Length: 265
Image (cartoon, rainbow, N blue to C red; front, side, top):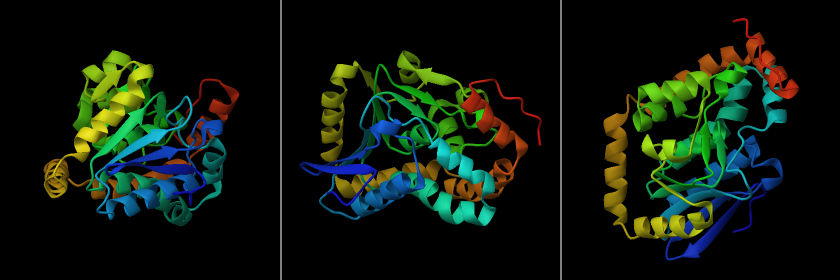
């Protein structure tokens, strides 16, 4: 499959498919175009009866360094309506497509997964990571909130206390700590990641498709208040934050490599 510019979709045989972020020159920074392709690919694969398991991976050193900074700066001039139609349709659309996919999904995380990258990995059923992987939910350092379901999923995966540490302090979680708290399912040496993740996905591909889909749906239903409520509530709250002086200050501070001076307005 080659109808994508920002991702790659490879059919590996035996029902296995790998969807890869393919922007290593930008460290797989996320744009609406890239996330739109992720959304469309997962929706297409979800409906394909020949697909038995999907791996979400990335080219290069980083899984994803988060949202593209040039794109983030454009948000300063966007209305809430524009953010909903031009941004959330792609960013949340990708997270929803992954989370709602009835197939087994495995994030293969070789390096840093920051903000968007972290939340897309969280949307997968499992995460197999290298010992060089790290996870960061540092939206708060920009003066905004996690938009892709991270504030819903993280407490359910690692507990409220650890989720608060990641979301409210922007703390990095990596190595054995990520494994110990349940953020990743398995962690292996970097040189073994490709082989182990393929074996893991192959094992999942052998699952009975209908039963897997039903059990997965049941697990989601058991946990949800629902996540759709979180996604819906996120937009008006995020719109307020994106129009704030603190968001502009957060962007300026990151560019200048200095500590931000947030003023609560």
